[in-house]
Amino acid sequence: LTDKWYSAARLGVNLAVYLVALILFAMIYSWKLRSLFSATAIGASAGMLALELLRGSEDDLGRTWLYGAAVGLSIGEIVWALNYWNLTGFIGGAFLLIFFYAFTGMAQQYFWRRLNRIVFVEFSMIFVGAIALLFWLRPG
Image: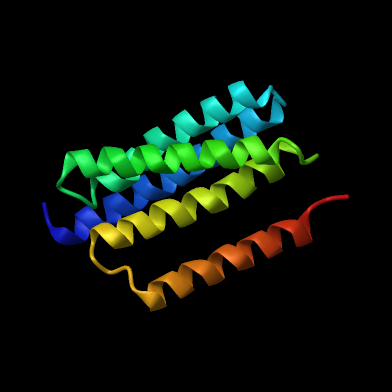
């Protein structure tokens, strides 16, 4: 197993995880359930998906689970607040995906010991740009 093939496979898995996250977040958010149910379902889903993204970054399984749980809890809290807005399922799911990407990406960079000011600014710019684009493209 060469390093080149591992990197390509890991990229494919990461893209699949983000696609599954978008589908799950949008689907659950579109059901407009009470926050207790939607935040729990989306938070648990986000935590499990974060585990998949982070498991390739860290050898310490305990820290991986801790960061995965922190991502899930954070996304669940965002859902709780997001339920007060009148957003479509897709826009709500995409909004949550942007946060999920930022949280898991920065956690990965931290595990790899590459999280510095430049990386943080890069993630911040992507985050702000994605949020701005999302609301600029929002229908209606």
